[in-house]
Image (cartoon, rainbow, N blue to C red; front, side, top):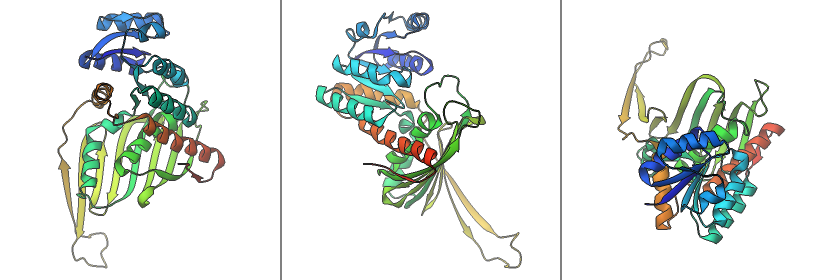
Length: 326
């Protein structure tokens, strides 16, 4: 079993520790909050390390779950130590640092995985496969809604980097194409340090048009995607892990009575095996670490996602459509 450590044991880091303890040999954890580190280590019966460097001498792979502003420096340490690593989203926070991290990992021959957990959600995999096989027809538009109240754990990025990047990644993954341009509207409703609501309009390769809505203002958690396809209307719910395909036909009707139009609707619910996306993500990371094969969500994927989000932030500031560099 792979010897693994977790660096940063806040909310997400604790989930990484829990799953690593089930899938691998969890050696220990590290966090700048020493009391928290010891508490989490005690829960899983592992060691709480006094430094990142010390932890790296005892493991083969690590999950980097610290705050975004420290991701790059922590990841560089892991790569220089020759350790495989998964860096939680939004990865390094900038495409420039992401590019440098990818080059370093490739040079050192270590696995660099990115923590885009929705890519591993079973409904996403089912939808991607169905689109590939043409069962929904041609994808025309992609619309996602990822909204909730403000998460107190977020301090160093806005809603585009924290939430929007998930749907940008799923969009790229499902379509198999890259974003060409983005136009963003939004702002700081609650006078926060970063944008707390945004709407992104993206033009993808292959002609797909996408709309991504994100905010920290909605008093309920919604995680849904709608796909308008030539063969039906597809709705995905990340939380319920449900997928529905709808189609309709209109019968002859009285043109003078538009209120009573006979419409026959067919709704099919596609069976999806429910699984914990983070567990699938970490299993994929561990497999990539031992096989030498690329993970499903790689550092290069993170780089592409970051370029889109940076362009969205630029559009938000300028009020203009921004072309996305390759």
